Image (cartoon, rainbow, N blue to C red):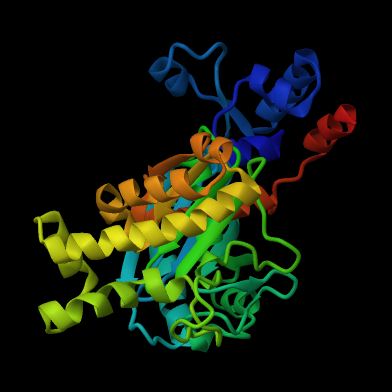
Length: 383
């Protein structure tokens, strides 16, 4: 029960009974005990906001603790601190060099965590854990970034151990696309879905997969590596060592590379988007081509996984209006009819905040520090 409230933020007694599979009476008894222990509170404010909800929503007591989310992106760092009621207490970001040193980035992040804890009013002793997203695939067995990472300085590092030493708190580590997927399910565009593909397009191309409302990492944590789907085995060399990966056709460097011969100069992503949104036909064509190529790849994913929704996020999200049409058309053309017609293509609602918020959600979903005797009793009753 505590775990469900941690993952979802707000649930009524009836919703808890349905999800756990026990009677409302059993839930009510446990809720009464948890309220008495100060771990759960009734949210009369939420009930007043949404009068269509039957029953008073419950939430974990915000004063009982919180979690920290940290996202190490390719060129930026973002830290978010939230309480157990899923309210963001403080957040901030810093710029990083594209080829930043991982340990220096962790030093900067640890200092920012300390600064934000001071702003938030949350004591370090009340932090249940820190969820960290890193820019590349993570071997879930060891928690270390793999050689496919786009940022070489992260490869092989014991990120959880090293960052835990810096902040003095338990640390969980995952690929930041996985965290983006989790955040969109908890807070964002995928709240009404349980089977979701999150696509993060930037310098690299990553994906996060949520099935049945839970992250699906695969055997070793390598699921969702959409950028390394082979589009053309005779195509350009990819950083992973293969040829013709999706990333070399739709990643940011491919977009900019296609435009430099006609626009010249040191074009960057912001300029590309500004020109496209201003009507520049060359930039709009490049984004349309990217959308078509990405859509073909996602059509294969739809045939295999049959998701309810595809969330387009990362640096790509601001271009949603320009790429979603070609993505949708390609899915309709190349996916099986029922798989294509049953999937929605939606923009990220969280934008550049998604991965850091996903770090918070990771702590809550992994249940760090949340097990209680009352919670275990209800789970035992459900068996």
